[in-house]
Image (cartoon, rainbow, N blue to C red; front, side, top):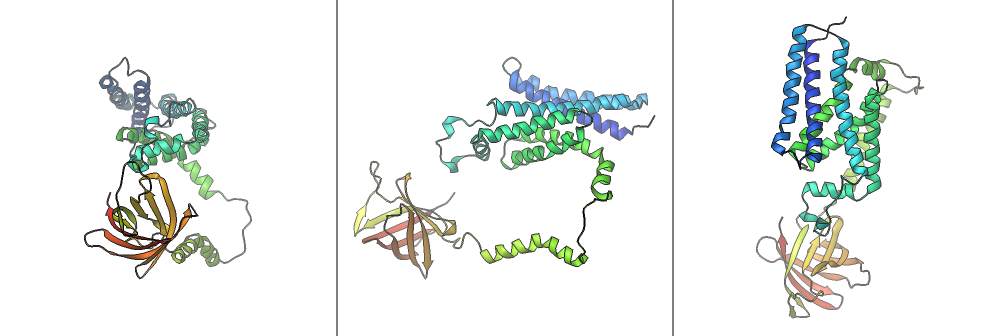
Length: 351
């Protein structure tokens, strides 16, 4: 009987305790919080981990190397990861996940927290959610069978990596990141124990594909071309923001049209209130509300500004002069909007 190293016993037991504790805690939070206090349920992961660690030392003390014992703890890891991902998949299909509250849909995009942006993006398309759910459920099923276990790992690892990265960078929550990390570790465990077989398959075994009779230097140059050619094109294209010192959102102050001062009112939508200078030389005039906008493109040279409008296309263009107005982020804009003279002070807004 082959001896099982203590480190393998310990890692297997600890990982099994973490996985079982994590998925049991999540299920308890989802379905039992009405009857069981959260502080009681929060003890579940700790108890599972402690029990697993204690058993690892008991297992080593008994000096037994039964494959069935190792298979049992590995089975707990597989079942915990599979159950957790399958449950997430079924929740997506049954509209229990990736659903955005109606109360947030009318809020300005800029007011959304990173987590709200995440939920809004994925809640927009139910078929996309079903596809992701199907991959999760299929990968979970593959993981549970001995012959397809490794295939299940390869299906689930990209899914888990994507989930973990989004949880981190969209700030979904520390507890969610920990949960995803545990499930990711559970899947990676089965990748590492098959390291020798994978090494043989991917690196040692020879493939049957024909090869071109070219010098190795020429082949290397072609392979590296996917790095240097796109970078060359990008360097020739230039940046999207050609005037970063101008780009931003500006509040319109002291607006005059045809030498007549205009004041913002609560009932009119014809008063210019906000101006945006954006990437790709974009320019937007906003009249009181985001629903009333002119979208166009600007060119500027030696402080001479010209704006043409894409939508509405029938609006008159603007030609004028832009100059500093004194103070931080203040600009003076003077010129002609069609046949009307337009003078305004723009105050840059910071976020």
